[in-house]
Image (cartoon, rainbow, N blue to C red; front, side, top):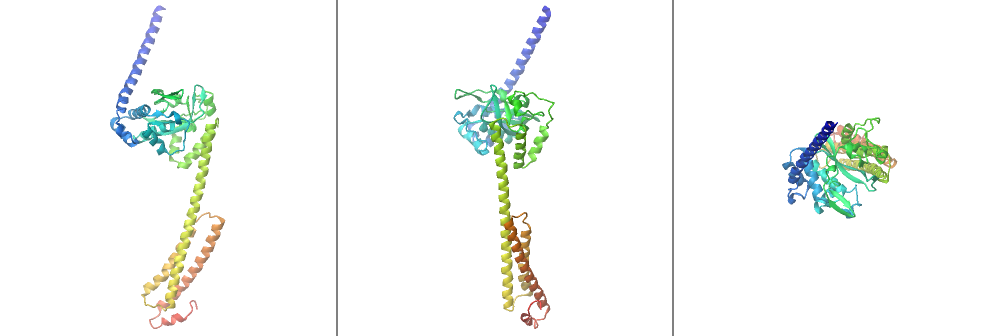
Length: 398
């Protein structure tokens, strides 16, 4: 019994030493990378391009690069406590990135966009994720933003905001927290809930209700969700179709709080605005196409009248037959082009339909007149020089 006791103690001691050694190796690995990352010259911190250039030059693997990005942001950007509630997911991305570089301060969306942009510029696939969090057993009442990046074919989660320090008694205290660096999706979901379950990176995503109930373990009795294939499909969609698909998933996963409701409402407004924009663009295109047809018709009529005036002067001053022929060919081409333009208009409204109909009739009438004059001109060219004069005293078609 005594020997067994010593054996157990020996095993535990060995495991402890191994764990400490493993932890030390990881810390030492970070220490080397962190030191080099924090040597980034201040002159190169004015843009994400310069920061990415330094990181690409000084680090080889994606894991090294992403660590350098994370530690530089977490160490150099202070959390903007005064504006911590001024979260605006719909601010321009460029502004979200520029602000922390200029002021060295920011809130979660600034940390996330900055991290994401540098990742992308160093060749690391990354996304900004929007959602909400649970802290100390309670769901936060303001939304949050964090990131996911693909390292060595696997997705990992990053929260450079929480990884940079803590807010306590209205003040920010800088303290690097590696728990929010390269976390697995399965562990990250315990505290971070994306609005869109696509960004859980889980084959059995949890619902918002599950998140509130602290049921974050993977339940394989649920339908299997191939998030990898779904992300690939998502990436092929247009911007608005991405928004539409995201809205569908958000609604499907349950509207548990006002943050989810607000996000969903914004998506619906964005979709509606897109529809209005498309309709306005369609109407603008119809108007431009119709106006082009009007212009071509006017040009055709004017050029046709120029021919008639020249004919009324009995083709004086004298022009070559080919030049006279061109005087009728030109308005015919312009009138035909006008009809072709009108044919390009699809699904016009009632008023535009009436306008198209009226203009089409006018063009057809003009084309008939041009055709009659072309027949007359054909007969004119067929006559000898001394018989052409008599043509001016005959009515076309008779």
